[in-house]
Length: 109
Length: 113
Image (cartoon, rainbow over all chains, first blue to last red; front, side):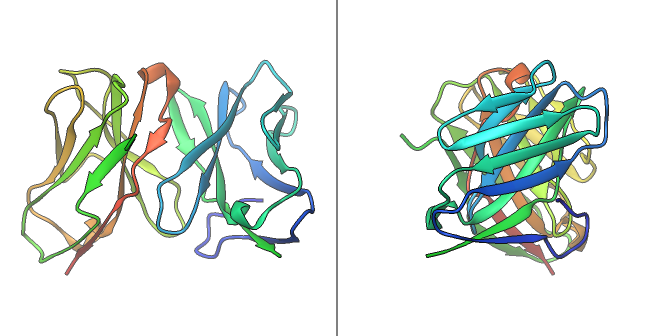
């Protein structure tokens, strides 16, 4: 899950594994959520979004799950590749977009 | 297709100096944003421009000013830099303000001594 500390939580996986990155959001009234990927030295990259009236949304190799009961969001990456190594963070929107601090994904060949 | 371009990529300033960070997008987007990213914190919105000709304060606007020069360009100015403004600054754009930031530049790494 995400952390407000200086050291990002890290998820280490092997190439080909499925990865699950978690995010706990704070506002039960948030109506829109986004996952971003940020590679070292680069700007954030939009991956996938989901509205609060949905539980699941799929993209190319990625799936976002939303559990509003426990205010939890997850990003599943299928068949993880070395190029997926990055920091992933979620953002929730209620009147304004609030960003999490992220989880570092390390993919070993 | 360049997307969002920020200049400079790196800059070191002395306390009290002024500086303008430049941002341009080539996607014909209406909305543009300036964020700062600090260790241990999520991105924080400094200012945004929902459409050409308008600008609004975000979460942390103090010490900054912005100019939406035209639809393509949105600049961020530090009039009198302070060490607390040492950060990585990202510009972003989206089709409209309701879409939220979709495309980010690669950032300007700014150090204030």
